[in-house]
Amino acid sequence: MKNLKPKECPITRDKESKLIWTYYTPPSAETNFSRPNDEAYLREVWQFIPSQHLISTHSMQVATDYSGEYVEATYKNLEGLTATFDRITSLPPEKSDNTGRFLAVKSFAESWFRPNKVPSLLDVGSGLGVFPYAVRKAGWQCTAIDPDARAINNLRERVSVNTIHGNFMNLNPSKIFDIVTLNKVLEHVIDPIAMLSRVNKWLAKDGFVYLELPDGEVASKYGPEREEFTIDHLHIFSMTSATILASRAGFTVKTIYRLQEPSSKYTIRAILTK
Image (cartoon, rainbow, N blue to C red; front, side):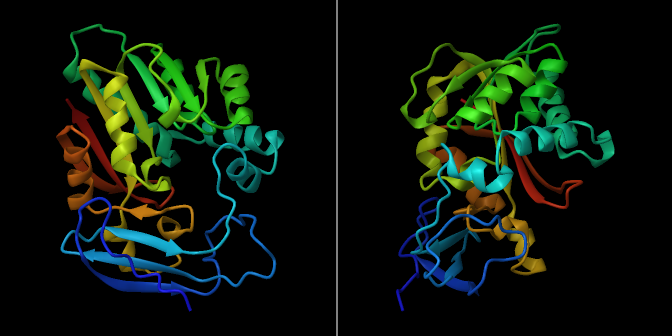
């Protein structure tokens, strides 16, 4: 059996870790990502000490590529993507994670920028487009980046925002933005520090970054079947590791807090500045 124990935390550089869970079958909340039929499912979640940051480790061949396979597995096709978009955007405010997300960004923007400023916002990894949709409805300038062509088409045609198709790590800034948002994005990448560091190139000097991350520190108290611990989440954060992530990417944490969203997800929200 392959040794899946990590040598070091890629965020905090902790060396000591403990095994939290071993999965021999996918948890109930996990998307059915494509993998070889004859390949046994084996995955582990390890927690680093003292930061409490968690990572998921495995050696399986799983198709979670965000330029195509992720949308295919999650929404099946463009029709499934647009149906999910319609369902989420029609939720009442008290049942919508997205409503709370935009209000958090809007509230900080109103206190941070000069009165009556209409900020420009870049949303990285926009996916369905429900957050850019809220931004556009508020009358803000919004640009959305996503690596999946179907998501980009939905964003352009249904959401009516500016779009950039491609891998964020390979893109150079087309312009500078007042706000950059990464909503439940960094947990999906191998090196979150590198991705967050790259945001510096796109952000105005007096702008801010809004992050949402899965809160593994709280979610781990409620068992291995939680959505925070599915295979596409390579990282599951703690308040400590989220703060270290920001610092090592070159940002200062202005505010950071945790909450349970209407969907039941345990989430860390943070606002960062240069």
